Image (cartoon, rainbow, N blue to C red; front, side, top):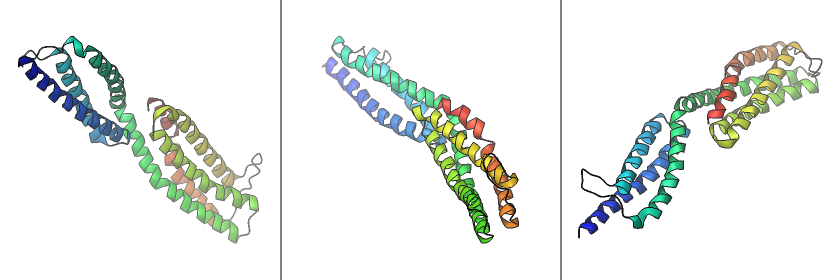
Length: 231
């Protein structure tokens, strides 16, 4: 009868582990998506799982529960192996809390900035078309809107983390560098790129506004590239 009582306690603890594993997965997912409260919950889940698994495996002296019998060693060894990987992943997420939250704040800023860039770019295109500017100028102005969209897409891939984060960060930098290069060329002219200086007053006014807005993107390029290695 005493052994049956021990088994009931272990089964209850095992059920708690099952629920905790679900909470761990949920809070880990929410944490990497930038939910600040999820980091605290994930840390608590990690500690609770570790404590309860230790009770099942090694017993609880205060409660009079002995260590699990040898018959459960293989099963517990399998759980321990999986838990080692899960614990390492959870710890990595918690360690990078600041980076994850900062990048999500940057992404939120970019989500507001990119539509502004595209709006001003549309004004540039419209002004160039009205003034019958060259096809090349219109083409590059139109492409800037696509470049802006690519910048936003790249940062979203960075936030997804994993093995593709660093590559996505490189793409983000390339897209931002290209946007800056074309923007400067349209304002000042560039013989190498064969982009003529925009002279239409309304188009230049919009380009100057784009230059101001783009500063917030430009200022975060190096930080995003550097931080991507931690995701």
